[in-house]
Image (tube, rainbow, N blue to C red):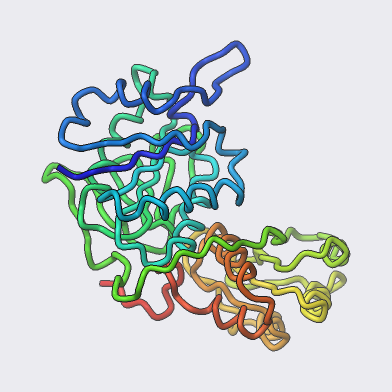
Length: 335
């Protein structure tokens, strides 16, 4: 019987209805009782870390979750984290870096309806999360709506539908169908590297989505705020305005101020490629870091994690371009 550590953090799955709307309130013991006999085949120990709406889960909580797992890594076969859906993709991405090359499965899940609701999707999500947590998989995952997504590839794409998460630019690690759990082991992380725990994070990172007509002077404010890193969601495959409103010049100002600049695409699918158009080539020449097919969530959390370890501009770029947790597909050959 596999020994599973269930870490509760609140979220919709733990919510109760009040006159002011749903609030995260139920502790793990109550949630455990609602699961019924699905827990019979596991040895589950519950750790109530905190009870929060995921909109309030921030880097401080990511470090608490990572620390909780690291302290217990030798005591359990796998970990399940129940978490609100709104920021789950940020948490799963950041845990993938902080718990680098972890040799156990760490599975985040939650629900779109509270577990106490008779139509909740939480039961099936927990069933899948426990199955993955007791498997031979290794790494950080999101288990939702009978699909398992690599932690650095999960993005929330629906606000109310049960198919809330999608695996962006990467195949599902596993799905559930009429044959049971269909696991695609070829998409798991390369586990030859040693486990490394590093929870150092720099929160002075800003995500900016470009829009036509945006005032480039917003970049001056970022310098005044002492921001250390900026992730820019550019147009299409890599477009930046430079007529009338010159964003290329302002990006150079950021770089001259010692701020690391990562540029990705606003498009959810496929990669950015700044080598195609003139404006993108100019940005690359000035030293911006290209994100290729990474999600915005992975870009932000990876940059936070890297800046927590080094201030060296060249090292930051080198680390960002390195594939740590299959967050970047440039050198990964998929079947």
